[in-house]
Length: 257
Image 1: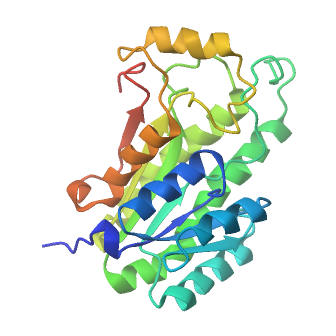
Image 2: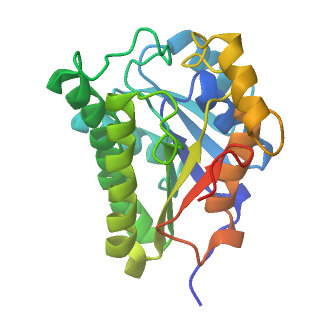
């Protein structure tokens, strides 16, 4: 029988966790009793304020996920602080990006620099956290890695070329890592949202777009960050112990996966 660890016994590291979707992910895991490392790059005040709400079970740590050494140091600090290794990683950090369709690079304007910025942040960041987590997860005999994706793979209603390409590469890495790490009882899954109402990244989205998406979904509403965060709990919980390499779309049924 493979080892399974309850949410309230896990040490969960969430990247880009001080604001937006990240903050909702932190609150969801804290609500279920987990200990949480709140990773941030620039949002120090927000991260420490969030950690102060649960001073025993939450710790704010600064690290740019594209910096391998900083990520390794963050994992070491988490282990030292809590006394056991990180069991669960939620790769949520997003390189500087705004969901503003009018301001995005179109097919003529798109550059390799646009793409590479997303690859470095989305794929490189997830690779760094995964590699930093492996020794501790193998030691415990349990690991959960959850990557945040997008429903724009299936439904590129706004062609955010660079963002979607980065997340698509992350989906491939999710599948190949699940194959590689399965024998270690480490699962790797993805949760893909649509447009969320509202995060910092979606603040530039016009209200008419939210209304259009809501009208297109079976549930007739736009998914909230809190709803997305709750779905993410599934992949960390014992209920999903036999699920790996999967991509769960959480968007009110807009996209059928």
